[in-house]
Image 1 (spheres, rainbow, N blue to C red):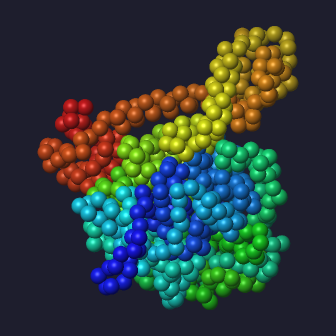
Image 2 (cartoon, rainbow, N blue to C red):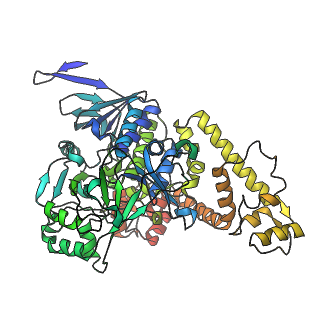
Image 3 (cartoon, rainbow, N blue to C red):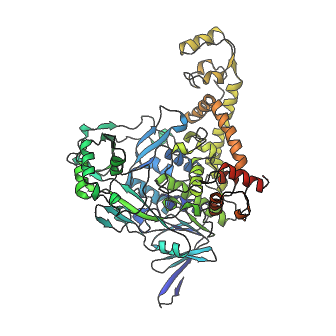
Length: 635
């Protein structure tokens, strides 16, 4: 409907169940979750060209990030399905190590990734996409009521999810050139920050960066090492098989910086806005610029440079490992000092981007603001970095916004349930003073939180909230039943130390038996496995209507081979759960808790943890403080 505002102009007023601000990876997952859970949702973006855009690296997944994407898929999110449709190269990282750190990574066709996700969004029931800049939050008595756009239009809603990415008051910088835009030259969002501050939500400044894009025709690949994809393709989505998505892959390339490169950077370091103070925001520790690497790791005489295609139908090549904010002339000099890039033609300059964000300490574990009912936040707005971290938060914020509208309890994954749980717990509990990046080392229970078993851990939850279809859930239940049944059978099937068994073991380079053993005991041996022992597994033939899938066999092998380690971690999780189940009253006054140190009192009052487990992870709260708190609460 239209109403006349105070200036005499007509103002549009519309009502939705939920509003999502921003259409990056967080916004897409949040909006899809809300709409698929039956909530009438409108998604705002400063440009329709920014829907699921990949402004930096052209890949999805990687170390620990692959875990997040598999978990997003297990919960019913879209990122895994979308990269399966649009990848141009796929690789499983860390294959030489144990399954806990195996991480799937795929190069994306950037244009196709965006196009495909936008098509999904535009054809999702209950979801409206709208190009407009949101400038104000409408609140009453600490409750969200809706948003106002730059045109003055008002959109009322009981839930709003902020997924603004790197667009708030964004400015792109290289040398002394400053462009007040978002990534890729798209418009920045220049008003919403003021509205946040006016409503008592403090803002801080972070920065990230991206390398140059080089014209493929100007690159000499003969001076580089070719990096091919895997022959065996592992899908990101549990709904796909290798046969569904296998395709001809496109190579990436590896080269290195050298002393000449480093000398060019050192000689011009005073011209870098990163070092001159022109850039105010804090950058990511684990994704430093090339000038950062050269200055901080002076003992290194070279750094890896990954030359990656941005898509199948473009000549733009992404120069991974060489993000920079140095001036244009210095960029030409340093890139052309790298073997294979001697005649490089830059298509897009490298640049740093500064933007406004919040401290996630302002949020509950559900990603709802503690002080504003119905307002949620996800992605780089919360101080994280990366597409995958953003998508994971967006999915959970969308789920919990929908649950709030449905009058149901929030879904909060704990650190023993998934990397998503680790990510969000770290953000809302620990003070992040730089863009947060997910890493396998952050997960205490990573042997249980493997990417291969994400569906076994999380699909029940996805089904419960309504994001997993009945057909998919029944197929999942059948898979889980097969794994459990076969592991139990193998554990209870014994073989004797007879000649046939001994000959089999010798032929497969395995120690012979001195006494009877179960088939599971044999599978535990490094040189053996479920497939290898088939000739001596007399019961297996005819046991199932069709051969077990590769995914089922993989789970059987891992469950049996790592049985001892898995049991030990499950025991640790039981102890962890006891602390997580010890709730702290929401109205507790920490000033009344005598013998708490002053710092602990301050931190506990600021963060207001929901349970003893979360309290114990707060920086500045000691084990002695936790003991005092538990005594006070009679826990």
